[in-house]
Length: 207
Image (tube, rainbow, N blue to C red; front, top):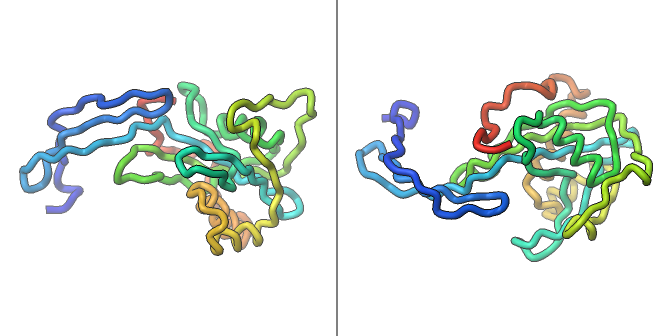
């Protein structure tokens, strides 16, 4: 029997933990052979990221401390989908403005990703932003907590890809977004999806 042919029925579901952003749901799932097995699921609101590519072929990267890994990582401007009903593209534009002080005249959809489907329903969508403009200093968002110490750099796209392959850029969203951008550029950006393309993987429980 294939996975598609079996329903994997949830016989019981309880909330094991609820935090500020994530929660943990404990499901009892009936397997194809009839046994019931426990599956713990990290419930996440979903996220967006932006590869901001300037006219010089450089991408905007942020250097941010991440407590779970005990140090800073090079990442894309990104954030969680924490405004109910907000289009993902609007959330992405807000994160680009807040984290990089930039607006973009053009957005395209790069890629949709399940972050770690063996343990979480987190999905994220990565956009490509071009035709960038600096936001005047007086209009910029004032960062707090880890974001207050966040660094910002523009890195040539080819160099950024090389850093991915050298293991120097390891944030998953950044890796996916940079490699997708390099591939898109090689194809002269043909075939990119519109920013409002259907996204059935977007978590429906929040955001």
